[in-house]
Length: 442
Image 1 (spheres, rainbow, N blue to C red):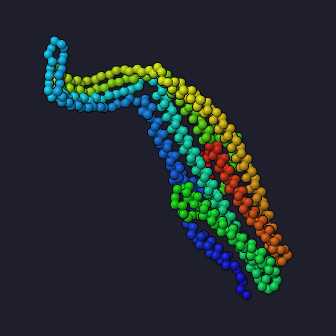
Image 2 (cartoon, helix red, strand yellow):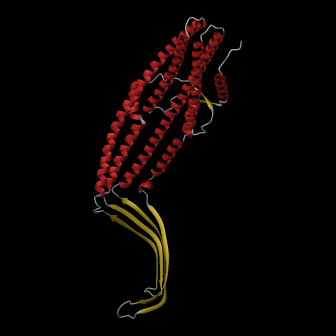
């Protein structure tokens, strides 16, 4: 007699088969991270910002180099002119007198001294360049963490998917068994209906997982800055560092954590800003020099012709006696900003220590849970096999068999969760301690 299998089961198996065949490329975590560090748009923007700050950290941008410029002009006039040189001389009248002037000069200006404000500005620009490199490092580290989270989330979903496929196959066989027994009058309708409900539940779970997997792939493609519908399969080989030391990593975190380094660089910039504000109290001494040519022709003037060619130079000193207290306010604000930066360093060190200890505890707990879940899986598999044998012999009910099946599914889900949770905690430990970009194998 032909066995009845519900139509939704055929549909879901056809969809899953076509989905599995369509997978193209194989992607490892190392490849994903490498692609993200090369192509991710946020990473590329961060690198551009570093180049901008590098260009800004030049002596000329701080006023340490002389400014050389050239200027010139020419003028023409045609006017009726009357000129009186002295009371004793007659008035000179020149109708439609033409006057022309041509001049050009190459000039140089160089600040010899401004209270060392230009020197401190140059140091500040270099420190800001260093800060941009630290900020770019933060972007790289955050990108690695995001890619790792997305990758291992997909790995978890795919493992859960395989577990769900196994569960669906078990439920299908159970339903077939109950349907056959019902046809021969050896099973009540409630047992068939319960088996059908469980089969439908497992089918829905599989469809849901498929959708979540597709969404997770799009998340990864977005992080890799490529077409979001690019299809691929992932390959995972999760290993853990066996030489992680609490004391060593904590010490590294206090010194090499990117947020801590950035806080110290901001403090250095605040200290230089205070010096720049104080430099405004000093006079500015500048050197001016030029070499130029000038010629004037004036039909109504005395003399009628003037021409000059040569060098001119001078030294200029300026001092601002009163500027509406702007210098004093700028200095006060710079002092307050420096105090703020010092407090922020202390807070950052405190936060880093807290984050490290929390992550370390999470990591150790995840490793312990992983070991426990592996033991639970062995027990769940043995229990399921035993219950399957008893069920086939008719010695246990549908409910008891389903519970054993669910325990096995939950155990497989739990071990996958524990595995990837431990790995992500390890990656976060490396990030906090400043070791994530030092060639550690992910």
